[in-house]
Image (cartoon, rainbow, N blue to C red; front, side):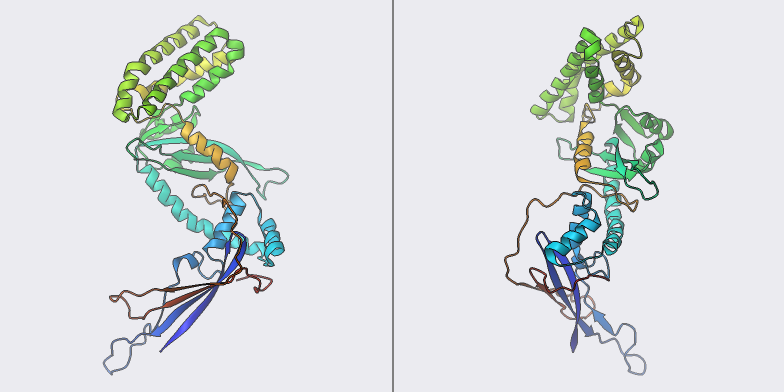
Length: 402
């Protein structure tokens, strides 16, 4: 004899709500007889496990589809919960209290934290990372009258021609000092490519586990900014840096692997780097440009980071990129789509909004799934999961609550 344990969930498909009825078989399990021939009292009844997509938040009425929609709407479309509450009530006659949404979101942050740590461990297991940080405004209830400046820290493992690598991780933190980067990188050991922010050399000095590579795109940007007042000297630097980038374009278009790119750089890039270094030393020694001028600042910036700038063309570093543009492009994309969590939890990657809107067809769909337990496991029979989808959800109560 078996009974049905029935659970009701709601989910959201772009354009309409669905009510899901999950029916799980409940069976009495015959346990081994005791000394007096009676059944042992431990676990006399076993209930089939809830399918994974319906137990993202145990005990909550929201299924995975609704939770995903709330996350995308808030962090990608920047819709606060009170607006989502108004939209659901106006368009679907469903009222979900925003305090309940906040509770769901806090629980989702805990789940995403597990994914975040797994992604972080995967990225730190490699030997080449790019890192960058950017500011983002945070609406903090403790900071009245204005938004609080916080930061996204981003690490990226560039994909290699052999298919290895790939992946981007976003970490939210109010601070921008080197302690944040130290915590983010943990015990990472390998190449670290970054911009000229002075927190990264501190990491190198404190840990001794990373080899720093700086970004030629940042150098080029500073010389481009000095073109107006730097004259022919600034134009010469920009032209020489462009030669370095032509070598990288040639390597990419030829499909060279790390060793092939290393040989090409030895032949074509290193002579250019030598000319740039000689000109930098000569211009600074001659004091032709004021240190406070745009060209003087560009020259000093480049010389102070020269060891990390020319290192990419040295032997053994053919897999290193010439610049940090890959991680900067990831930041530019994320700032259009994401916002930090109000609960201080990092977001595990970039969520993308749905591309289209699927309208209900007005037909009731039934899905029947049979999940058979392994014969080697507990003898709790064949639980029956009956998913009844109502489209649209018009017979729901006016308020959804736990």
